[in-house]
Image 1 (tube, helix red, strand yellow):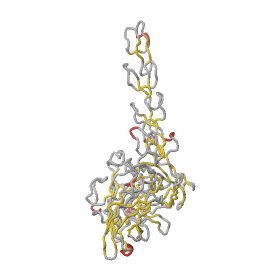
Image 2: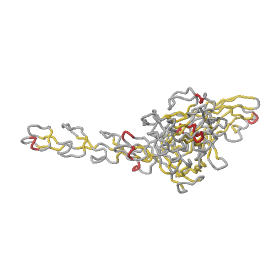
Image 3: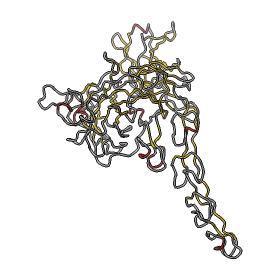
Image 4: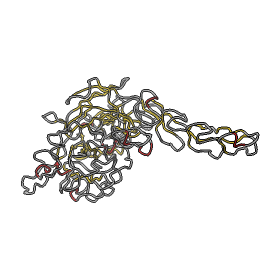
Length: 556
């Protein structure tokens, strides 16, 4: 098996459940549900594997990280909302529902703490197993006390009570009006490996289903979730702003800004006041370097220069950097452990501790002085080692010596290359935001594109469990992948004594994995005549850098 080159290389489009890192606990103090509450559902959404969702709220740092808010079946357990709707059906039927609660574990932030109409408008980006998806936005329904996703569904014209119709997931693409469909409004056209690596992308405005649409349930029922003052005339559109970050290929947080230390470290924030004392609200996603000035006017195509280094440690770990100064540091001991810092000094953020064995030993301090916290200890005299604040208290022949205030360490981060041994399977992420009524979403809301930075732990796109069987005039082929990093597609090879190994498919088999994850390929048909007498099947994975990975050969 060929080793992957350690250069930045593209993945397939990433999905929320794949890219979003585990959520930190910080939610509404009271229940604030969101989901499908009108007995409807999303259909035409392949759900034989978990369906992914990205959740955010405008004007609020609220999101749900990687919490499971999509029900593939009515009896699903572990759902963030607590339980699933009957309408979710069974796994594999193409029907899913949304079930979440900002008051439950797994939520980050609270979109509408006081339950007021026109506050905390929600956005849900749903991504199905096959790349289809849908974008939904709804406001707070004060009558129900929930964010009701069914409010964005179309009204059933045959229903006297304006019941919702199922909402169809859309295939990924661009419709005749130029709007992106399927929840993917940022499209990768190609990648130049560089240096520096450069991604060429096109940004579109999304197709959106809203409770403010004239034919929506929210409007027909006058639920108030489309607040005339806050939402009237509003259109959810691409902001035109692109952002980059780096993080583990297992996932990174969608929040654009997070607290850089203390008890709120890693939590989403809008400003420093969200982070408490001695912590700052800092960018986790940085504005992308584009050759077309931002904000872009969609549709727009631009080149994006991708990061090649990220912070190891510090107060901004795994974030893009150009120098170690971008990485900051963290207090690594003392009562301010975990607080963001930039220097080791007793008058710095980390402060210091009273050294030695005196009565004040170990106390937090900011100065070495007899009048300070540490005070002093007697040297000589009748009471050596006793605490003191002046020489006179030490008696004849004694001297009061100030106890040293030694600084607690501020451990600084370092800026390291993504393909260095400092990282194990590190990725670069490129995403965009939406706007509504001139308010930009605080989280990345487009399904981001991910790019692998290599590293010794980078997973392989090699085909596994290959099987083949004769079915009439065709050979039916089955295989799976554990990951699809840097994958362009697959070829099917066979082998004969006369020709050796040769390709039998007419065109590349397209990847199906979402977000660099693996996928299953069942009953891929190849005409038996294409094999020219060959009785073996080899799956060849074609990678973006031109190299290939080949499976074990199987016979049929």
